[in-house]
Length: 136
Image (cartoon, rainbow, N blue to C red; front, side, top):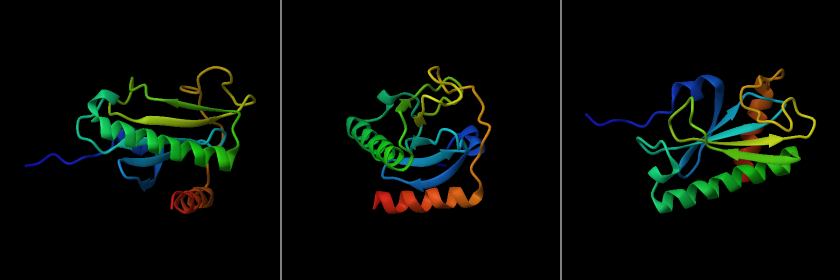
Protein backbone atom coordinates (compact mmCIF):
# COMPACT_ATOMS: atom_id res chain seq x y z
CA UNK A 1 0.00 0.00 0.00
CA UNK A 2 1.46 3.36 -0.99
CA UNK A 3 1.36 6.39 1.27
CA UNK A 4 -0.53 9.31 -0.20
CA UNK A 5 0.37 12.96 0.31
CA UNK A 6 -1.92 14.84 2.71
CA UNK A 7 -1.81 18.30 4.21
CA UNK A 8 -1.53 18.41 8.00
CA UNK A 9 -5.01 18.57 9.61
CA UNK A 10 -4.10 21.72 11.55
CA UNK A 11 -3.48 23.61 8.29
CA UNK A 12 -6.74 22.25 6.87
CA UNK A 13 -8.66 23.34 9.98
CA UNK A 14 -7.21 26.85 10.21
CA UNK A 15 -7.10 27.86 6.57
CA UNK A 16 -8.88 27.65 3.22
CA UNK A 17 -7.63 25.81 0.12
CA UNK A 18 -6.96 28.24 -2.73
CA UNK A 19 -5.29 26.18 -5.47
CA UNK A 20 -2.60 23.70 -6.42
CA UNK A 21 0.59 25.27 -7.71
CA UNK A 22 3.36 23.36 -9.48
CA UNK A 23 5.01 22.10 -6.28
CA UNK A 24 2.80 23.27 -3.46
CA UNK A 25 -0.75 23.43 -2.25
CA UNK A 26 -1.74 27.04 -1.54
CA UNK A 27 -3.91 27.90 1.47
CA UNK A 28 -5.26 31.18 2.86
CA UNK A 29 -5.26 31.65 6.61
CA UNK A 30 -8.57 33.22 7.55
CA UNK A 31 -7.11 36.53 8.74
CA UNK A 32 -8.60 39.60 7.07
CA UNK A 33 -6.38 41.98 9.07
CA UNK A 34 -3.17 40.43 7.73
CA UNK A 35 -3.74 38.50 4.51
CA UNK A 36 -1.69 35.37 5.02
CA UNK A 37 -0.95 32.52 2.63
CA UNK A 38 0.58 29.13 3.38
CA UNK A 39 2.45 27.02 0.82
CA UNK A 40 2.70 23.29 1.52
CA UNK A 41 5.05 21.45 -0.86
CA UNK A 42 3.54 18.16 -2.01
CA UNK A 43 6.50 16.02 -0.91
CA UNK A 44 5.98 13.06 1.41
CA UNK A 45 7.90 13.31 4.65
CA UNK A 46 9.27 16.82 4.02
CA UNK A 47 9.85 18.61 7.33
CA UNK A 48 12.78 20.90 6.55
CA UNK A 49 13.66 22.87 3.44
CA UNK A 50 16.68 20.58 3.01
CA UNK A 51 14.26 17.65 2.55
CA UNK A 52 13.50 19.07 -0.90
CA UNK A 53 15.75 18.53 -3.88
CA UNK A 54 17.59 21.55 -5.23
CA UNK A 55 15.05 21.82 -8.06
CA UNK A 56 12.17 21.65 -5.59
CA UNK A 57 13.80 24.34 -3.42
CA UNK A 58 14.06 26.61 -6.46
CA UNK A 59 10.42 25.92 -7.37
CA UNK A 60 9.30 26.68 -3.81
CA UNK A 61 11.12 30.03 -3.91
CA UNK A 62 9.42 30.78 -7.25
CA UNK A 63 6.06 30.04 -5.63
CA UNK A 64 6.93 32.24 -2.64
CA UNK A 65 7.68 35.01 -5.15
CA UNK A 66 4.35 34.54 -6.96
CA UNK A 67 2.40 34.68 -3.69
CA UNK A 68 4.44 37.65 -2.43
CA UNK A 69 3.80 39.56 -5.65
CA UNK A 70 0.07 38.82 -5.34
CA UNK A 71 0.01 40.12 -1.75
CA UNK A 72 2.04 43.20 -2.68
CA UNK A 73 -0.18 44.12 -5.63
CA UNK A 74 -3.54 43.39 -3.95
CA UNK A 75 -2.92 44.44 -0.34
CA UNK A 76 0.03 46.88 -0.42
CA UNK A 77 1.63 45.78 2.87
CA UNK A 78 4.32 47.79 4.62
CA UNK A 79 6.37 44.60 4.99
CA UNK A 80 6.13 40.99 3.86
CA UNK A 81 6.97 38.26 6.40
CA UNK A 82 8.07 34.93 4.93
CA UNK A 83 8.81 32.11 7.32
CA UNK A 84 8.89 28.39 7.91
CA UNK A 85 8.89 27.53 11.61
CA UNK A 86 7.33 24.10 11.96
CA UNK A 87 7.18 24.11 15.74
CA UNK A 88 3.48 23.18 15.85
CA UNK A 89 2.96 21.73 12.34
CA UNK A 90 6.07 19.69 11.49
CA UNK A 91 5.13 19.24 7.83
CA UNK A 92 7.17 21.62 5.67
CA UNK A 93 5.15 24.75 4.96
CA UNK A 94 5.94 28.39 4.29
CA UNK A 95 3.94 31.37 5.56
CA UNK A 96 3.75 34.54 3.44
CA UNK A 97 2.11 37.29 5.48
CA UNK A 98 1.17 40.89 4.64
CA UNK A 99 2.24 43.08 7.58
CA UNK A 100 1.32 46.66 8.36
CA UNK A 101 2.87 49.08 10.83
CA UNK A 102 -0.64 49.46 12.25
CA UNK A 103 -1.42 45.73 12.61
CA UNK A 104 -2.27 44.01 15.91
CA UNK A 105 1.22 42.61 16.51
CA UNK A 106 3.55 45.15 14.85
CA UNK A 107 6.51 45.16 15.16
CA UNK A 108 6.47 41.76 16.88
CA UNK A 109 5.70 38.38 15.34
CA UNK A 110 2.11 37.78 14.21
CA UNK A 111 2.14 34.11 15.35
CA UNK A 112 -0.05 33.51 18.37
CA UNK A 113 -1.85 36.86 18.15
CA UNK A 114 -5.42 35.95 17.12
CA UNK A 115 -7.22 37.87 14.41
CA UNK A 116 -10.36 39.82 15.16
CA UNK A 117 -11.57 39.80 11.56
CA UNK A 118 -12.07 36.84 9.26
CA UNK A 119 -12.90 36.84 5.57
CA UNK A 120 -16.48 36.09 4.61
CA UNK A 121 -17.24 33.50 1.90
CA UNK A 122 -17.60 36.13 -0.85
CA UNK A 123 -14.22 37.64 0.02
CA UNK A 124 -12.60 34.19 -0.05
CA UNK A 125 -14.12 33.46 -3.45
CA UNK A 126 -12.85 36.83 -4.71
CA UNK A 127 -9.34 36.03 -3.47
CA UNK A 128 -9.46 32.65 -5.23
CA UNK A 129 -10.68 34.27 -8.43
CA UNK A 130 -8.11 37.07 -8.28
CA UNK A 131 -5.29 34.61 -7.58
CA UNK A 132 -6.29 32.40 -10.51
CA UNK A 133 -6.26 35.43 -12.82
CA UNK A 134 -2.99 36.74 -11.35
CA UNK A 135 -1.16 33.41 -11.66
CA UNK A 136 -2.10 32.68 -15.26
